[in-house]
Image (cartoon, rainbow, N blue to C red; front, side, top):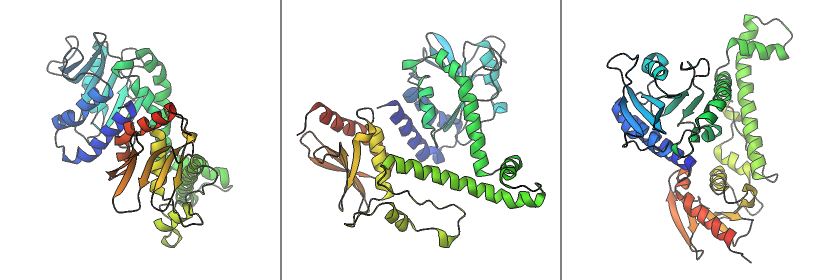
Length: 371
């Protein structure tokens, strides 16, 4: 299983099980140890790689321990402090990380509640852990741009120099992105004033602020929706129409129903309707096999009974079929004899469970000339 697939699988597990965990120890066993094992690649049962309840001998208060120390090349490289899933990640509750960071070889400190992971280093002062993380991984909302940087921390390709050199840029880009996201969600006075003065020539009074605050929020939401539509249109090709997306605060009479949205998306003259779910599933399959072939070679061709995913738009090179027209959704996969077997899926992310079969099908097409 590829790195991204393992990360997605763990994220799904966290989403499904986090409500049932009541203690920090349960969080460690269910989420954090699997993260260290399946994502970072270290053997949690080998004390030469992962040391639980780690204690340093110098300059540390007696009785204090770090939950895990991760060893690479016989040196402690990462320290992990754990909290109960759902608990806020505040540094004032993890003072051990600061103290242990200064008296060990570790250059990476991780504060986590099993769902969100904050990664720290010492960019501001040598051997002193920064107060702000250089990387924030949220398994409930994985930022795909961070995956290559996260992979550098894994045992197989551990590259501390590369991690540290990229940490400065990651730290500030991540902080800026989170600040922008906060402004899109709930703009503060400075942001409202900045944008208002770009379009309004009068004085920025209390009345003007009250008038423009909801306008700025609405404009930001509409801008995001338009960007999503443009990206989807580009990905699907010039022949597909953009998806109408309603603003969250739009009046009810202005919001199209889901059926109307899907109908507007793509309905050919013969009545074939390609739904949003089919398009999302197609994009997932395209992403899974993009290591084998260029994405533009993978296309979809819809029919009334199923939506086919094809290589090179050739119906003799069927990668998969999406049977989404009934209550139970199925993905149809093909064996070496091109015999289709349907597999039930409950959610679109279940398609990732069939990544190996999808890649194997594409590999057969690449290796065999099909007339």
